[in-house]
Length: 239
Image (cartoon, rainbow, N blue to C red):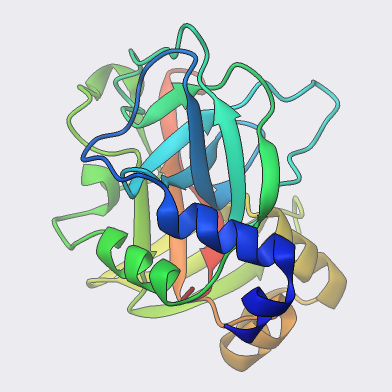
C-alpha cells in the first residue's frame, strides 16, 4: 500500500479500480466507455475483467495492420464500444468490438485481483471448452459455452519450444487431462527465445518469466478453415 501513497498515478489507478460503480451485467450500450483489467492480449482478441461487472469480456480491437498489441497482464485500460458491437458470434459469446484503440491508464495488482482470479477460475465440468482435441467446427457452437477459460492448473504449466517450426506451446494438467496448447502470450514467447531453451518448468520458468505462473488463460480462436482452435493467450501470476 505504501506504493500507492507515494505514487499519484498508482493512487489514481487504485481509486479508479476500487471506486468504479458496480453493476450486475456488462454494459453493452453502443458508444459507452468501458474499463478493463487485462488478462491477456493478442491482435485478434484482448481478454479483460470488466471493472464494472467483474466479468470476463473479450475486446475486438481495431489494431493497425502493422501494429502489435502492447497491452500486458494487469494493465488497466479504457475503451469505447463501437456502435455495432457485433454480439452475434456464437463461438465467442463474450466478445464485443471497440470503436478505436484502448487507452492504457496504468497497472493494478493486489488482493482484489487475487480474489477476482479465484472467483473467475473455471470449474471442472468436463473437457476444456466442452470438447476434446485442439479444435471444433464453427457450426457446432451455439453461444451456450464461454470461449474463455481461466485455468488453475493441477500440474505445470510447462513451456515447450518446437524445433521444427519454432512455435511455443504450453503444457499443463487439469482435472486428469494432459493439455497442450499453442502459446500466443508474447511475454512467454520472448522468454523462451531469450533463454534459448526447449523446455521451461517449475523454478526455472518462474525465474525466467519474473513470476510464478498460477493461471493459464485459454481462449477459442476465430474460425480458421471452418474450425475454432484452443490456445493459451496468457500466463498469469496469482495477482
